[in-house]
Length: 240
Length: 224
Image 1: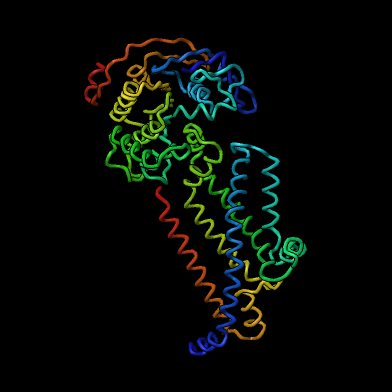
Image 2: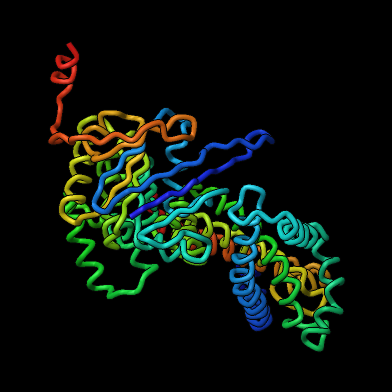
């Protein structure tokens, strides 16, 4: 589904060229939930942005759904993917349903069908009563749910998630993780998730790449557990 | 005293209406041109800045300098400098239609700079979001950037219209007419101060209405 071949990326930092991604080789398979874990600044978010073509590699090739990602193909290929951001990145001047409908404005399709689909998705993410709400009135978890509904409206084959739960508390994080798992199971969507939070990765991913200083240190297969909510009391006592 | 003002208004009713129409005619054309070209140039400035998505120092420098030059020349001299250009475009350097050219150019410059500043206030991550959701650059501008910046742009455009109204008062120098010209020629130079004050009050009312309308539309469109 996604293949990176000898991918490297340099950035100019304070006038000096730094190689932030070093010779990465990686294959992510269809219907997989793949994690990229590493410390802040390790390069995991850069790898995610290389995968969706937002950043161009200096060396190497990237293939999305079998096609090589380049200047000509990237806009077409990225239309079959979508992304969830740490800061939600919703348009604050649009209400909930208009945010969900945003990707349909740049694609062909029936307006009526799109509205029905947006309503269905808002029900799927548990926001059926919030169609006309403004973004500023929503909690962090609700905003991320709107972002997930917006992601799903185009039936993407791949969803990239950049720290999707790091702005949320534990309860909200659990709900978002369960939603991502449901999406993977229900729609067969491939999910690539970046996180510095090991518990998020452990709960969700089939395989994980550990990134250190722009290199893949290891790729580990995981047996994912059932995602369960943990109260503050359980979490505190569980540490003992 | 009020009676005298009312009498002056009745006596000059026709002249005031003609001048009012001339002002609206000049401003309306300049307003439309400023909106379209100013918005476009503001977007060009925004994307070609040093931190823009299509960084291009040359284009930014050229557009930015042209805007600065237009804004820095005293407007009354700018009108005179533009006479040959008006002649080239319209075949005449004088009159209401010729007045629309310098007025449009100053409106474009003001609104382009306002647009650049309003777009800079939009969350920078919106570009990446638009890309990740499949938008190209034009779609990013229309569906993402304009929507997020719309209330600021409406207020900026309101200020541009008010500036145009103010600039239009000196268009009499090339025969542009309008309320300002009537206030100066008939009011001030002919010692008809009552007429001058009537026109000043009319201008104040006009600015109040435009600003209140702009504020209302901006408030309705702002859901942040």
